[in-house]
Image (spheres, rainbow, N blue to C red):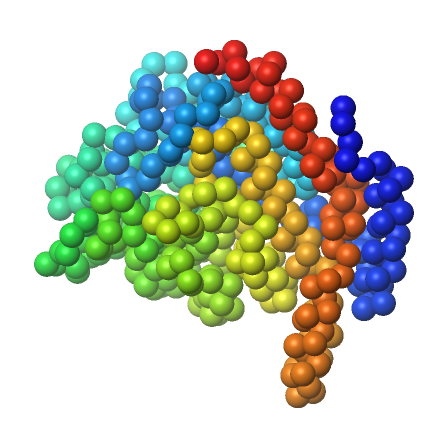
Amino acid sequence: MKSYQSRETIEKAYDLAKAAYAAFGVSTDKVIKAALDIPVSIQCWQGDDVTGFEGAAGLSGGGILATGNYPGRARSGDELRSDAEFAFSLIPGKKRFSLHMLYAEPETPVSRDALEPEHFRKWMNWSKKKKIPLDFNPSFFSHPLADSGYTLASADPKIRSFWIRHAVASRKIAAAFGANQGSPSVNNVWIADGSKDLPADRSSPRQRLKDALDEILAVELDSKTITDTVESKLFGIGSESYVVGSYDFYLAYAASKQIKLCLDTGHFHPTENIADKISSTLLFVPGLLIHFSRGIRWDSDHVAIYSDELRDVCREIARQKCFNRIDIALDYFDASINRIAAWAIGTRSLRKGILEALLEPAKLLTDAEKAGKNHERLALMEEFKTLPFSAVWDKLCLNAEVPAGADWLEKVEEYEKTVLVKRR
């Protein structure tokens, strides 16, 4: 197995980096441990292009699209779990796994509004065995009753009622996950309801969505087993002109109901950085769910990378010392590249962002700011950019017993040759 650098080289580089950070009052040993302890929820749907197990050939409706046809897509729960386990071996730190409703595994077909925890028994058994907690999402897409472009905000009471039952079932399944794993399962509601062209009535669909959400949340569940969140989007395919569940709608709704708000880094204007929203929203909601993805022009779901935006968001969370109020997750799906590599790239990039943020000597910045020494604050921000972060990252990977640097790529290539190509 090819290695780009030896353990000895990594340890030597780390000793130098450790001293460099110590000069600014940062203990890299403590930071590495803290960075590994922060859980990241990895999205199951990267493994199969959001196809699920209902027999559909692929995504339909819902304003989302998986492009590409790279060989090796998972076709069953067993394949998806196997692929996820392999991906986990390449990714450092605590992990969770997020499912959509369409990943149920009933013995015979069951309508989405009638699914129960038992239909996810294989997932719960796997979760407990692997000690990987599960999060959850109702699936308001790839279904005949979503073809109109409206679900919870539909003007048709029969359609709306179906999706309300679906959302209630989802919350009950999430609560069962939470009870099984001993920690709350995050249940995130995102719908694609909206209009391709200019609507004449913007109010009525939002009133229907509010009423539907009220009915869904009226079902009381133990808060120790479930965390409810709601997620907005700027626009999607088929909802370019109007999205019912806008940012303003869900911010107000989450604040009024005191539930968590989901901010997806790919769901805002391309020039809008959600880092600035964290300190504002946390004044009014109990916490946040942050989905890390990467928006490119109109598409919001490219593989997350170690970008300026990702780093800004992680730094803001660290500076606000609010990791305890924020659930961190990934949300993207790329069918054009090796899907396991996509999992590894995105999750490793996010873990890098978390580590870098925790390594920042933030107290020095705030002390300079309080003293009115803004020149010192800016100078230190610039100096911190060139601290030997990569050496600390490699050491974190060693401590977590996962490949450092690019060493993981050869493992993915071998898995593709021995497992994925057989699925063609």
